[in-house]
Length: 205
Image (cartoon, rainbow, N blue to C red; front, side, top):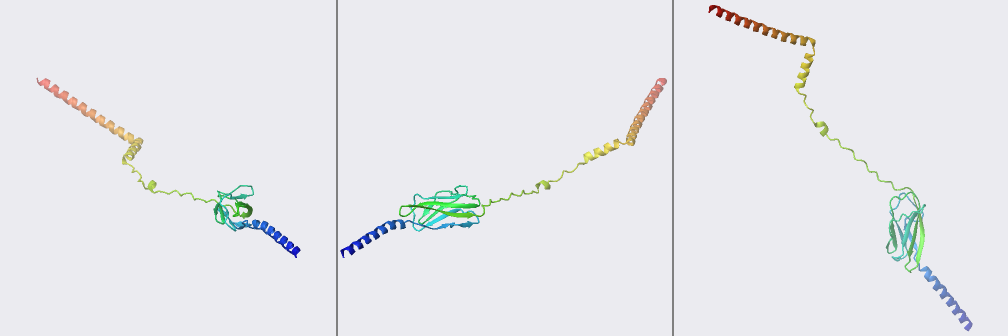
């Protein structure tokens, strides 16, 4: 009877040891979800990634990076912890390709846990095209009145064209000569009459 009791006591002690070593391991928190999910293919790059755990993780010691095939980290800042969720913003301009979310957090029991979440981006973010402004056509350039042509230059041009004609020049020169001839004729006649009148006066005396 005492031997049976000894065996039962040994079995109970062994069970307690096994349970004592297993409970701390089972107490670690687990990753239960993520955005994007593991293996997901996205049409466009995400703006952030979110990791969800089975219990509240500690707010210290959290590290999250989103790395592409070349090893470039696209995480834009420190992870934000809200109870069971850990969210990390991402940089703009992520190219198409394969990525890994590499995370490390401190479990609620004080033990650090880590893991990887792979995902793929099919297309890079297209840059925004800003149309160039179309220049406005104002009516000010065409609404100004054209300057009116004065009559003076036209008359001068007409006189110049008449003076260039040989016939016109001949007529003008002949007219001027006739005026001069008449002036000489009347002048000579006037002087002759005065001389005759003066001679007649002398004879009478």
